[in-house]
Image (cartoon, rainbow, N blue to C red; front, side, top):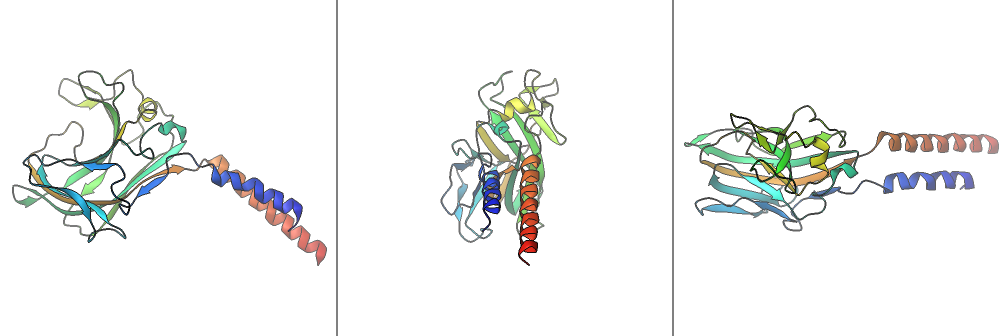
Length: 249
């Protein structure tokens, strides 16, 4: 290969190799990898890895009676820590809703992604968080559904469209992000990530749940400048290749 072409190819390789830390997908092939589910209030039911429901792999299935259910992770370094080290990030999860029954009738619930910071809790609440409603869980729609959200700018101070805050409450009990906190300051210190049916500020009755989750992922979003540099490098390689071919024709 032409020496100039080789140097250009090597120059492009680090752009792909230096992805921001945090990229991971948990398929439950290797166990829970730090993911935990809430325990039932009455001691009946619980959670475990189910090999019959996995979306191409085993799944974590939770069947219990509770006001709501949550799947949380505090220990897996791919899901907690400083998200502002990435320019952007996408969170994803696959969900299979077997049943959600309230007073013996099938109902729907929303699934929220919540990023929690326990270090700077105030106002008598356990943590400060930012959260996003990923979508509706509905047993009348069988099969797996993929839910996701992308944060385009982790350095944003205000809450992006669709995001809510928690850490303080108004007179009616509705939560909001405390005045001394920003979206970015919470992302910089995420101690726990949660997928939960507990939408902040909402109240729920005792409900029977049977839900499976799979393929929980966090993926850094490539920076546009890097993508542009890589494209430019590849375009340059193509031009040099054409010129070399023309000279030898």
